[in-house]
Image (tube, rainbow, N blue to C red):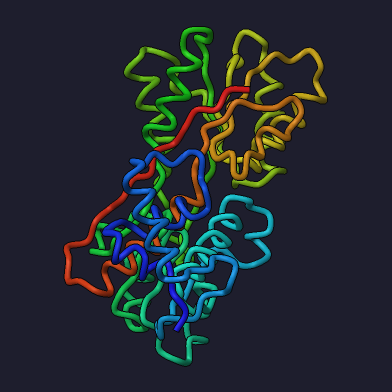
Length: 320
């Protein structure tokens, strides 16, 4: 059987994510020289070849998506997250089957674990438990349902954005979105909730919020609504909850050459905000790291009876 990242991680006493990032020469990884050398030495001794597709470790994962394929193609965040989860699972030696949450019955064969991408109701998560004993939610906070999960630091990210804008902007706004689970439960958006709380704490206007549906067109429409306000009633800076809406909002601003509104995009998947013209400042969410941690968690819970945990992955303010 071919050597997997998990074999190296077990012997080195580190996580799968750490092994993957060391062997892929990730320049942003902070790890001691001793740990890096130990991982490389073990990989060489075990004759690990990262270019060769790793053989399964006789374990099969279902990757469950809350978005349909069509919807996912319009949302870079979830598309990128799924691709990263699939890649991390492959590197760890798992075989995978990717299914839409509404089509779980297609899992005719049993699976050893489920990586659920997105946000799910308690009913949906209970249904998943019929198909696998171990479930990890990537991007949704499922801890209340006793399911381990990985989530971005929405609170910290929005706080970073507000702290960055507040010295220069009295009127800060937000274009957010509304989401529901597959069985129509409303999802509380921590980005919007945090923004409103911060505005209230800082005695700033807390009603400068516009709700769309996370699409490019929706971002365009919400920015058009802002631009229809008298200049003295508009926000002078706007935090936009995802990349797609940022693209639409920016397009509306480009059509109104007199408008002076600063945008910050939340997500910055694959550095996309850098390719918008003009490039946008952004709160970067590391979807690759979230995916690796998700696979790391599912491996851990397959092999151990542990209390569930929530891993919060930090975000980073990127100025351009």
